[in-house]
Image (cartoon, rainbow, N blue to C red; front, top):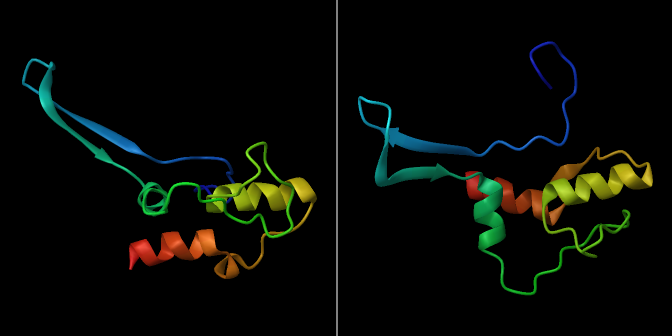
Length: 98
């Protein structure tokens, strides 16, 4: 939800910082990527992981490996995504934050 109270969907929020010198030029080899907890959770899974879509519409890949993919599969099916705490992909991200 944004500041005006409207729902905003399908947004990502990764920040890439690049250190600059006083002239505004990038300093080499000193960039930091502040990835989301989602990236960390996905990276921690083994190769060949194929997450469940919990009855939602399957995406082209056939797997729902992220919370967003599960949410979108529910939306595509016309279902509400009202209890995300029961979804493994959501729990993975939450456990990374604790």
